[in-house]
Length: 239
Image (cartoon, rainbow, N blue to C red; front, side, top):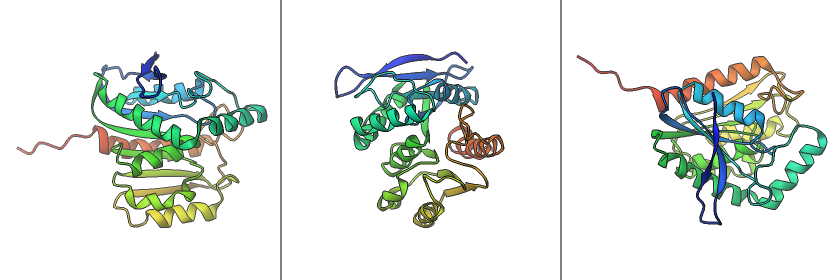
């Protein structure tokens, strides 16, 4: 897939960029791809391309535009510190507000044919949960989203199908926090939380030492089943 950066209009300034990748058909339901703390880097663009190849109009917005537009970081300890500093400079609630704006921008694209979903990683996993709790998307998928356990008062507001993925060995999100998330979502009609044995934080990213191919493929397969069911499948015609 060959994507391109587009401008997303904002009520705060002149707007910010987002990486847009289109399916082969040129149109389809939307998928908002929300970055980690490392920016819309090559990995996040590859994720957007992957969802585009699966039939979605994929948009990965620049979540750090308020502090440093178009930043691209790697995965060294220094990069991690830089990314965490950018989160603090931008503010999590401001990033959520921007991603709500980006969801509206995705819906408004002429290539987007209706429903939209969100998939987010790390910081983006937290934002995927927030967007689900604010009725901004039709389906939400979050990978190792840090901070969800501190926002569980919003779990009752989740109305769309939601799927969350966590690594068993993730020291950033211990299993007691994951269990709290599972308990908070237990009453929701279409919510699932998966834990991947032996997997660490960042297990989906093949550019990180923590990459776990088996866990990443299984999580993607589960996510695709859910997103296809909600966004792509059409009601059968009975004759």
